Image (cartoon, rainbow, N blue to C red; front, side, top):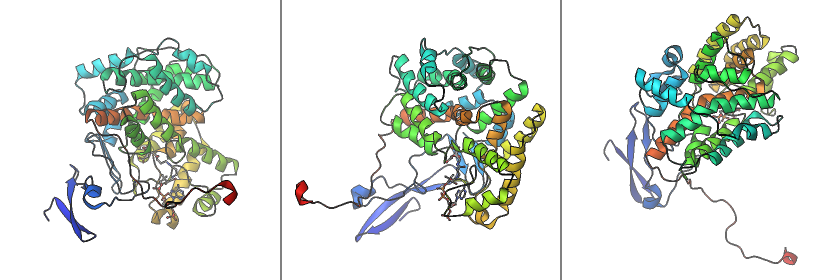
Length: 417
Ligand code: SDX
């Protein structure tokens, strides 16, 4: 047995498993030949212990609360970079030169929705949840692009990323039964906000939105990104792959939590601010209620993004002159929970979704749009993982299972049953 293989005994046979060590010293057992050599598979419902792939895009350490995009710490990127620059970093692996950034920005700005697509978006029922409109819209985008959109070309990637702001802005206006707006030329975030609200935004809002989008841009193999990778592994086109991620993100256990957090804070407010009642509900095994925005599959320490957003929410609300009781309730809820043995022993801390909705609400977004905003931030991450998977020509994703159903039995006619 050497340091880069381990031996296991299975039914009297020795099986050697290679040990894979990542650049941040994460260790894995490569079991890609396990079934061929032993007939065994592994079982890990929810993939808490299973790596689906290796990746050079994002590193996170849940125990230490560390998050790096291509080696750069999230706090430094949130403070010094821009969403478009971070999108370039995630997609191409390095921070761009001035010329590369200008070219990338120009390519994104040159994208425009195909003729007829806005009418398609207008045809969606305005009362349909914005995430339904986003998923349907992005899937149907494939209808407007010829050429092989299952290839990780800049053309395919830039067409989706460059149009995503307009798609999201149109969805907000369709949801509010308002006219669509067209605007371009002042930057990805500025243009999105102008199209979403029909007026040019205050720089405070542009800066806050840019920071939030950076913080949401990627998070390694989370549920929605894993979905994009597995849908893309069948060589489905880029729009169908990202639409798969949108649907996964919608769930309240994932990106949908940012909407649920605001709804939870509003209920606590309506309930006279009785925080202890909701903390007790969250701890009660017989109550399906969970403290939304709390807990994380990987972070067993503070989500570094939550810290940054919490700090930003104070300054943004102050600059906008917005007083929101929901922020005070959120802070009290965090304090009480982090002093409560139930949350402490389970390592439950605020995650990215706990404070983000407070800023989105202060900017004026309807609660139902919050998860669309999460998707807007995450689309460069999804595209980076899709590109990495397709560039590497990874095989189609097809997990195995352990069968626990009926063993072979004979068909009997209905009058014998
Ligand atoms: C995101 O993976 C990512 O990277 C996702 C994300 C990204 O950027 O892509 O970070 C974005 O999805 C953040 C998470 C947003 N979701 C929520 O805020 C929903 C509320 N949180 C949970 O439902 C839960 O914490 C999860 C889904 C986030 C994580 O669930 P796990 O890892 O499967 O943990 P678990 O359900 O097994 O919980 C472990 C224990 C259980 O109690 P016991 O059975 O041990 O007694 O902790 C309890 C749970 O009941 N628990 C909670 C809780 N979260 C976990 N109890 C009350 N409130 C909660 N929020």
